[in-house]
Image (tube, rainbow, N blue to C red; front, top):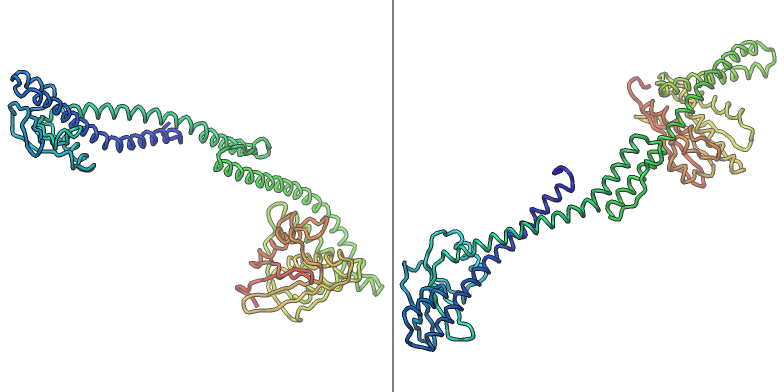
Length: 461
């Protein structure tokens, strides 16, 4: 129980209330001593009035008056004359004098605790002001044992009452904490546990209803976390299912393309000049399709295969992309320009770089086509000391805000209606395998620029 929030709150509340009561006890015990001594002074003054009424009192009556007042001697100063009004034998010498007329709070507190710390019975002199202006001062002599016993009795009663108040207050606060804090917190924990056990069960998603603002914020944060995580889990499940389907399709498609690749050998033997000119491109396209199927199958099993590094003539690779995309395009209003310097060599995986640049070029061309206007896509490159840079620039309409926010996120970074959003995600993953990065340079009404950075490492030319 003490390890729980409510249990610790109960203990701390009891301790704090007791500390508060102790702080109250210090001045109250001092006040009790002052009231005790003031009462003795008042009784002594009343007893002295009997002597003023009758100058000659019998010894027995005088002793009875002193006993009722609880004092040994009474001295009253009137008209600058100090008179011993009542007296009796003092058993021992006077140990101290306390003037209540000029004492401040700190002095009274110090005298009170000094009295409590002195167990021996002493005789003290107490000086105070008479009530109702019945003189200049009144002075009495009393013993301290009865005073100390009365203070101890009062202190014990105060401490017992404080303990009862502390426990009662702590129990009330304990119940309040259980109702207003612990129960809602346990509810949040219960939602977390149910969600962890079955994330697909929508009943495990919390519905914020706490009245305490801090708990409400925690519930709303948990709701957002559960919602985003559920969305991510569902998306991952869909990706896994899609990956399985694509792997099966790629397996069959690879077999079909392999058969088609066999027929291209006969096509190359044709005497038709146009067929002989287009046959190598057909062979290259089918070879790339087979390679893509192989890569897709590998991706379905794990991740994209690691790049096979070699020296790649970038200008020739981009030429293949331009010709392939030009043949595939049905529009003639979009021109694709190869501005890569001839002879530029870089180090990378030729097939993977082909896929990356092809994705960017195709996205750019489709963006221009969607506007219904003519435009241009330009592929350029430059060689710097520490890296190679490949730039794909178009004159399209620019990327929408949603596409910019989720540019490289699968199924969310699509730049056109009906797009899957996989192209840029795959491109980014392939370039990361090269140790590089694909980034959006700029976008707007004047067009969009994508940049690929391939760092130079060991073995780079």
